[in-house]
Image 1 (cartoon, rainbow, N blue to C red):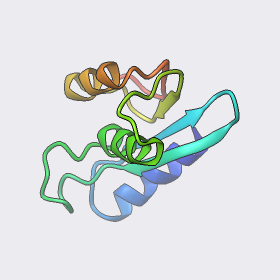
Image 2: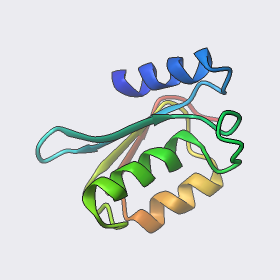
Image 3: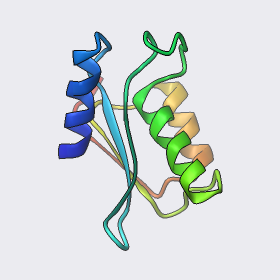
Length: 99
């Protein structure tokens, strides 16, 4: 969660809503991907921290199925992100604050 908080701070520093997300492999402790919110900077309404972290993790793993991985996010995922998390087959979601 510390990495997710750092990503949220970086997003805030860029003028974005301060949300950060990290995808971790709980079996190894490997940080697979991390990202902060970037809809403003990327001119992309889907550039939420969770979506960006899932995309990076999928590219790194070479598969959109992220079965068994854990997503840490600073804020409860919105419905769009929840759907993406489900489609990615993330094993566990931990969020820091309810939205």
